Amino acid sequence: PIKLEKKKKREYMEETMIKKLQRRFILLTMSCIGFIFLLILLILNISMTATSQKRGFDLLSEHIRNQNNFKPHTRDNFTPDEHPPAFKTGHRTNDWFNDMRIFSILYNSDGEIREISTKNNPNLSESSLLALADTILQNPKEKGKISDYLYLYIPSEEGVSIYFLDYGPEREMSMQLWRMCLWVGLAGMMIILIPVIFLSRWIAKPVQLAFDKQKQFIADASHELKTPLTIITTNAEVLENTLPDNKWLHYILEQSKRMKVLIDNLLDLARLDSGNEKAFFQSFDLSKTVRKAALSFESLAYEYEKNYIWEIADGLSLYGNEENIKQLVTILLDNAFKYSNAKGCIAISLTQSAEKKQLLVHNTGKGIDIKDQKHIFERFYRIDSSRSRQSGGYGLGLSIAESIVKNHKGQISVKSDGKSYTDFCILLP
Image (tube, rainbow, N blue to C red; front, side):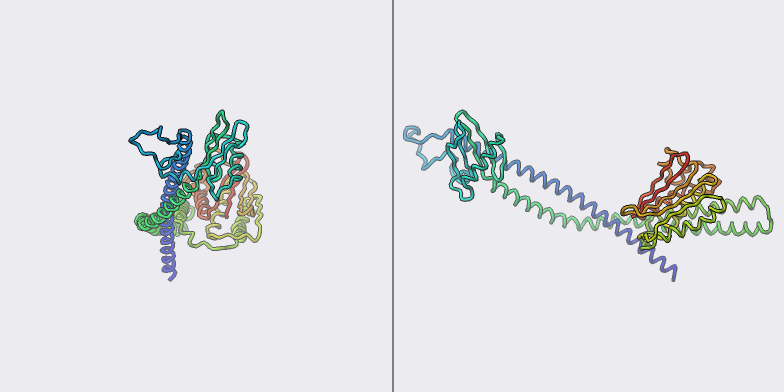
């Protein structure tokens, strides 16, 4: 039953990871499509706005040009073959709508109002038009946009003329086109979402295959490596009882133990990299867990005459894997004890820093050179290979520690002057 329960948990974890990958793929793909769509929509809107404003200024220019070129029609200024128009106001025929949207204020050279025209528009009073004109006169520009109106500012020897065009229809048309494009785009994205979902499932298949291979590798490695190693170690221990002080058996036992540590570390890394540990996350008393792990090193401190200090705040909790956190503290403290100087100082502290929990492990000693600090968390990286072999290290402990911290969405960093101390700082959410 226990094996069956573990198998179900593994299958559930893998299924959760696959679904999470699919969701990330869908989110990333739809975000890219949405960004491109919004970018196109923004460019289209800017282009439409610029085009409609240009058209508005062209209408104003044409209106002014026609007014300046306007001549009353009499029998003397058209040929017998022509027929006098029913009326001509200086605009194109049937352009009465644009004519009703154009307003003007004319000033003489003394700055007095010579003429004001609102075309009897009920939405625009003379006082409102004068207020707009006063604003323009304070900072005169050849053309521009003020409120809902486009304007042309034309100075001359006779005075100043300001012509306005009601920009409301163009703006409303742009907004309608914007809304239409937005709804069409959203509908298109909903349609695209369907094939993206199917594509995410197809993309996730190799990942599922990789999970299966990794699971098979872990199972095979556990069986093919650990079982023979256990048999070798057991037989060597039996022989050692029969042949005491045999240096060859001593070498076999020593290397077997080191090999066991290496296999365990590799399997730990494989398990942590798979992300399966997240399925066992739950809230637990972080202070109690760290204190329990730190307490186990007191005998080691007494044996090697180390000054061991620990200061752990009470009542701190964490959502994560308790066993992994124990392993993290053990790795850091083991590292601190191994590489501290004779009768040196080792300190561990757990505090609340802003919204994060800060775990700090300090030890005196040779320290870590700056050039080595950026590589310290790399797998199989060892600063001093000979010293690592003597202490039984393979350069995997800090890699495991980093993987644990990353799985808990935390940060780990190292600080050392390379001469007298080393600090490992972990921030957990």
